[in-house]
Image (cartoon, rainbow over all chains, first blue to last red):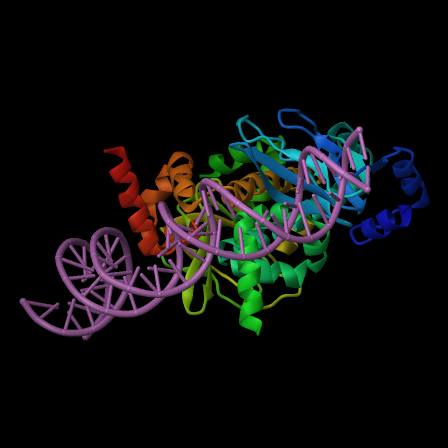
Length: 192
Length: 192
DNA sequence: ATAACTCGTTCACTTAAGTTAAGAAATACT
DNA sequence: AGTATTTCTTAACTTAAGTGAACGAGTTAT
């Protein structure tokens, strides 16, 4: 499990054994049961999550309805929004499956950043990469229809469609569960 | 114009006069005429833009149609996607108005990052902030209808609706120009 | 000044998503 | 096992967005 982490880090910077031990000594690994709510609406957590195994999701409750906006699976990093001024747009983070996560908080990061410049370099590279990826995802979302989004997801993250409830997937695609069912039936019809 | 830049930077790190001069000596300021295309589909520019005055937009051409996905105005930073493997999703950057931009490239950034740790800290903080903001924007987009998106935009960036052509705004909202016209008519009707 | 183009709006029609409701299938509960 | 709950699908109807076409206003070009 630790190897997964260090392999990931090695894509950005190379660590010495001492640095690896420094990270391990922070004791960041955490096992989380399916259904656990990591962050409730209104709470102000500064924790960041890195998924080693499993799946977590971000959702809002708007007019009493759950709206899922993101899924994070193996080797995905979730950095919180840290909503600045607007209090209304609060969200939840919950565990879709039993998962193994790496949990860090801001204080820890600030300390690591000042202690090891390497760490700051990695954080910069990682956020730049996440920003770029998210820009592409956002652009794709804007420029395609729900049906195209579904087909796109089928290509890029086929596992998600299996491991995640349909109604959560639906709002992730920006539609209602009923529309997703219909949309899938439509696609099957076209194929035949 | 330089003050705008240094005021912006001062939100993240404090610079000495020497550091300020180092930045100025890079000669990054650039005046750009309305309609200028800064990046053409297929080109591989590593330039980043920071808008001091004016407005630039990002768009794709899909099936012969322009799809605008982003507008950057005063004090917005545009970092390129640097599409990794997928060549098909290429985009354009063009000038909506006569603008004054700050243009930097990757080489420059790499040099500055290694020379001044402060600069790297600023870049990290900036990307983290941009990432968080974009996550919120993306979530809002996913969880709202075209009409809600328009009303939302009216609140948050009322200037955009004035300074940008309607058909560009439409695709930015994820709809066709005709739908935007209709939607606006609908809203006016409701008010009366 | 006229012609060509772009831009925004409107209309009629088509298509797809939202809504409400009902029922089947799978899961969790005790 | 049997009940309750959640999840998924289907259907009928409503609402809104997509499409194709037409029109006037404003802009650009010649």
